[in-house]
Image (cartoon, rainbow over all chains, first blue to last red; front, top):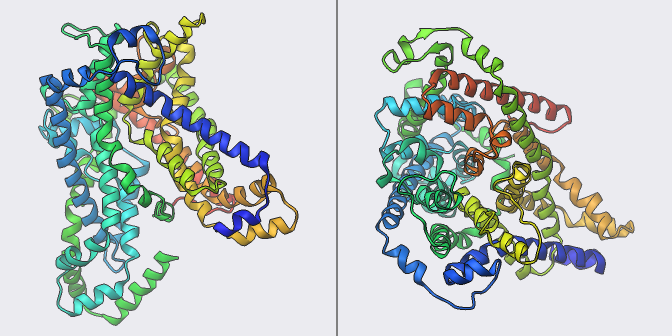
Length: 290
Length: 318
């Protein structure tokens, strides 16, 4: 593939347009982000007077100090960590177990189960019936509502199932002849072989759980239990738009808001580059279909 | 390819191990146990709510529950279609959806095609890392950054504009900006991530196709048009169909977070209407009817789109 590039002919105008386009894209993507990072280290005076800038003239970590000593912020951060760790653990265990079971083509009833999964991707009962089921089960205000209602993403399940199907069955035959039980086989052979795939889906699920906002406001009414996204929303919008001004809504300084955005975004941003090489696989493709 | 191979393998195994149904059941038992928790999840949290759409034809009362509420037929649907808001909701949903289909959709294709032409590996890797980044930000953060940059009085960009003697862009308060903002935020957040699937398809192009094109005297632009883009054709068709089936799902969180009383006339869509009227005001039966209408339109569209793709000689989604 690399050799072919040079044999494809030189065209400075073409190459120039390509690089110009990508540089413009980089600027648009990074510009806003750099502003938020650097203004989180800037003084209130500079943010209020200077408009858009890429580097502050005067650096301060006051905003971070304030947030890290703010009990409400720390509580909601902690809530998000709990939701993400427990939720993702449930997601990945349930998804991989079910995907492995469904990856066995000889299993009776597999077609029906596969269809059952696929159908949820094209039709759903909607928000209200889901909400009522959660309410009938008494899960409102419990994190179990979040864990259970999103326990398996059908798309991830289908992709993982296709991945398990690529594992050569000779391997399993050999283990089975050695008297290895199905569960032991899964734990000792399949899981270690699937580590990159499992790590990738763990990240995808963690992204979902960490970033969830809607299900949190839908199922959790108690503000002490709110995750970080809901708290951040309160900080950013309620205190700056002036339109939803609530009793007790607190005015945060601009730098504190920026710092809160950064702290909310950071945990995922430091992880994903390490798993990036696994995103690019064709696995996404062949397996979109059932 | 792969599933077929494994089906054959499965058959071979089945004929080799021709035993009674009970033996087969026993062999499958550990696997059924592994499937069970997931099966219960789909049953309780996906299929019971699907059955719960029956309350769209009832007057749901918390005491009667799903089973014992009074039946009212299509009264809630009649109310929906008679509602003065209905066409507004329909129009808003369709316009945002059309923006997604026709303007958002090509963006990842463009990014993948351009990125595929880059020879410098380190540059390519860096660009990829950066364009994936916004996908990992929540909508709360993305909308938050928008507010930080564009809030009318103290947004950074608006302040820079005012300082330069220009009028501010009232993105958050002027409804005229809502649709464009929605589209740009979508592209900013997800276009890079959605390019992955096209990049994967481009990586599998046979290099000899380019060599042949060069021999035929094609320059880089022509190679792009005659080799690269045709290679993406079937991926584009499949993904376009998947999108078409989700015309009614246009990102609840995103829209809800961007919504405010000033832009409600353009930002109110079925999902936000259901949330507001259903969950917050407790009109469960009526809003279930609204949701069912939405799901039904989505289902019809996906069936239609699948037919369409088969007509075009592509494989279809299911």
